[in-house]
Image (cartoon, rainbow, N blue to C red):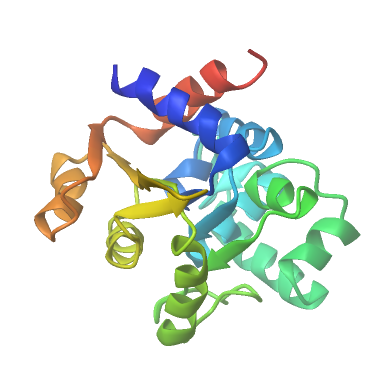
Length: 232
């Protein structure tokens, strides 16, 4: 029932709302979930994406090597010297000057970042002190990152956060509990999906009482969402 309700919300907000996705890197470590998220973006179910350096890096690594952290994202087989793949990817993107330039210059036609660029969907990549690289476009100043995120959360009507506890809490702390759309007050729907019950409950524990938690792995979640929302 939670899934069916979410699908109805997303169908409505694709036309009338502002859908924010908050993605952890686990979304691109699996071939099917990466493809599912790409298709959801292509079909208008994402108005903005929040993530960190890792999501973008490993998504672009997958487009180049079909690996995430050196592991084949389909077979899960470890690739010899694959742990260098994401570093090489970062260097190539830095050489191009931006993620958008890299995608266009190299005709990258698969993955989440490619879909965002292709569909002119904005994204905010908030960095941390431990990032490799990072990629160009990653905002390392936490205050600037927060301002960039807030410019989108102020318009959000639905937020879906997948397997990224810290980005989820950050987003929840700056997302309003309601919006006024065409003079009508409506709630902001906030979904948190994680395999860890602790991670799902953490945002509610911090005061975001309207959040809906779904305890499952995000690979199944994304594949189910794509199957029910795309090509209906």
